[in-house]
Image 1 (cartoon, rainbow, N blue to C red):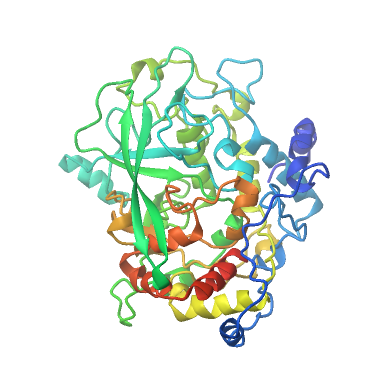
Image 2 (cartoon, rainbow, N blue to C red; image 1 turned 90 degrees about the horizontal axis):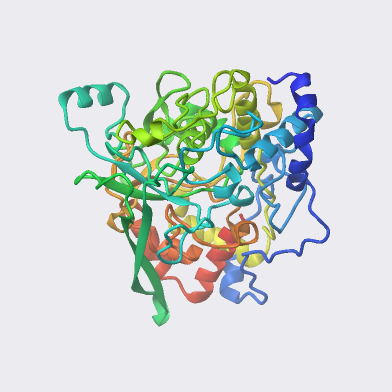
Length: 509
């Protein structure tokens, strides 16, 4: 835990964080994404009567749910309720670091230099906009700095030595030999960028009950303007949009035994749902661990997720990934030889242990907002339908957290995240055909649904799934396949008013 001299010494940074906890009176309130049905029919009232608002359900983060209810861009930027006065100071300083724009080394201050040499963004919040989802592209976008999306790159192991090393660390792919783990579309002066992602969409019409047609957009990805020669011919690519940040500490606090107990890899109960855990390597602990974070549950802890983002996304060395050259590979000598910002004052890194831990603490304590209109009849009707068509089989409504050292406000809380944190086969339509840990090319982690209805207010877009292809929640549902095919088809066969009720429920979360 950082000591008080650190908090006092960094007090000048704190004003940057005030926007995270105090909404400006001058800021206009953004509309919620919640679908409101003003005059529910007899059918909706009948379905509503089959559900009720359970105790605590209006506070999805349990006692840590923020009471500073916002329906604007600050909705996801509040500290956990119950946090101590000292820890709120840590939260504010962590926020200032999270929002900071890093600069090219060498610079006059060693607390802000170290950017790159290759990077995707200059700061954490450039991707996690207002602590919410990133901004996906709407079309081809070389050089577009407003888009917070990148491509994962990898190849299958080619040598026996590779296979041996990877088997020991529960990893089944290796970085692309020239470009590394991900494509970086920005660089410091004198270092070529790696390239640009290109995306082309094809319309895919889907027919629903009563003749309604929804047009999905099917993406195809490629890479242009490569700065270091061609990609390996067997390169696998997978797009990633930055996910929202709320409730991460609560998800981390769900006991491992709870998650493992819900796994049913062989579908022994015959319900068609065969969730699996992802065993991933933890740099933090030096052993395989249960994956919880990332689109394929590729990281075990908030700390490792943060460390990988600092290194890969911004090019900042840190206690887990100490290379001052970030993601540069041996094939990129000009990148390796570029100046870096490693400093004795930062433990020999570009962000040292104390500052890094403050960012992790901030990320763990971004509070879940309260529900909106949770007991409206259409919302309760939607809850009945959500459960009856099988959505809750993967989007598990509730968990109870365990004990979190030094963070009692996150401990022993009944929470409502609507996820099992397990891997599920989502079908060929969403497949990236790229394994990650124990996840195969068709499997994805069940994302939490809490806060979904505030996405438009926070991120100024309502794009969902791992690559933002779905422009609405309805489109996201219709992309479901594999284990979710039965539930997807059941949704498509609902009446229009039933679909509206189900969407009203999801948007109230």
